[in-house]
Image (cartoon, rainbow, N blue to C red; front, side, top):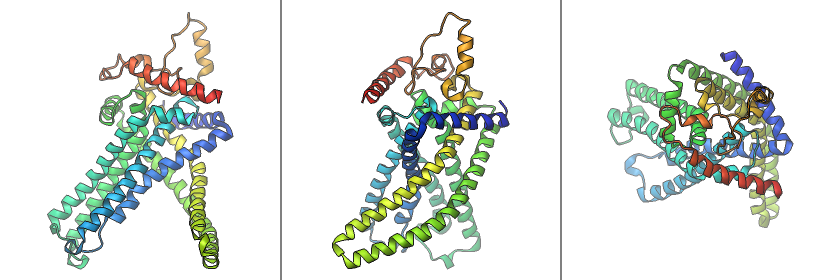
Length: 370
């Protein structure tokens, strides 16, 4: 499949997926996208809290340690929720359904491993920058005017390279490695090894995916930023001004005002997530289709979602029948039966999948009967 064909196929698959979810499913999808979007951004926001503005000698380390512990706890909790939501999103894309609670329970453990892996990536990027700073200007924090031009450029370039590296690794992890973790019940490092083995000789296709993701995300991000600017300018001023007036005239209602402002912000973010959901789905489907192209055993999207149901039924009419297979999100998932025969897949067993699948199927039946 060429890049053009893959782009078109991702568009058609996204359309069928969103149509299958219908209105209620799309509303739930907005919540899922909101959760892993907030989780993706909170890390950088928290780094600002952890970055001291004073010199090293002037820092109250006892107070800073407490603040850092609280910040890291918040980041860890939100990051874990975001990781669970990410797995729920992938499971829904693969199956064309969104039984949220079933997918949540099926992915709690692997979400924990994903959080640890993501934290290691961030710490690695920060460690590279910190090492360059320490080697260049020492451990103490000098004033900006004390840095030479060469030192400033070196630190800036290092920070930029670390940021780009973090972004590329995170994007590839989310798009390719997370689905492999779920599909083949692997840990992050094992899934990365599986990915590099499968994609060997096709790195150009991965580079094209990254380029497509950057272009589409940038265009959508700029458009949403422009709209958000005016919405926040008008709506924010009205809500904040109204809240101040209410709090001044009725101090007892100040907690209500705070809750109202937070709810309004989350509601705004939820609407943005609903708008972003088709874009997120499109990019993830592009990545999943690419995985299936380079390694047929990783073709993890159901035929109902890809639109190949009719062709599959016609082909099966000429045979005596197929054996049912299963995975952790859908009992009719093609590809699982071939995984154990591939090199490097010896850690993935059908027994592991059956255990997870039975639990998810039972949850689905409970949800449907409720």
